[in-house]
Length: 190
Image 1 (cartoon, rainbow, N blue to C red):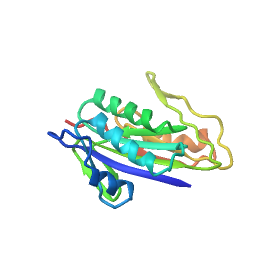
Image 2 (image 1 turned 120 degrees about the horizontal axis):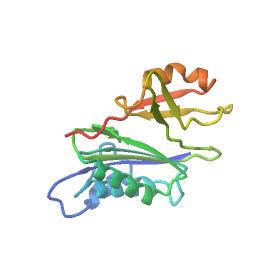
Image 3 (image 1 turned 90 degrees about the vertical axis):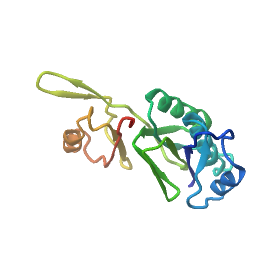
């Protein structure tokens, strides 16, 4: 297994997407190295590029991208920029009021955290769950088929629009034997 990660933040007034010393620190894995970028898409591009460089030319099997920002359209563009750079077999992520990585946490400011890994032999599949609301019930659509022997699911959900508690409570009944890791996605701040 090989992995790379990077954190980038938007630094207003900067013309260069990143300073060479910051890039070098991030590539060589110095804790606390934070890339600087003029906008959120450039931050995503820079962080994805550094995470990818740590893989020595290998294509990541899995990429995780977390974005903190003000504007949903800018957040979507940043996610797309990271996906284009990474070319990962599977990618997951969400927006949140802050991001963490490389022993750094950046809260309430535009920033991106990227983690990418080469996982030999791993079979990865992403899926998106949707909720249909009825008068007295909820239906969750998009569930994967029954879990295999070595399966795990990661749920990144917005607690305001997805019934996390009820889903987690009933998940073992619906998907027996599937370990479920959960995180919350919070819409943009501002």
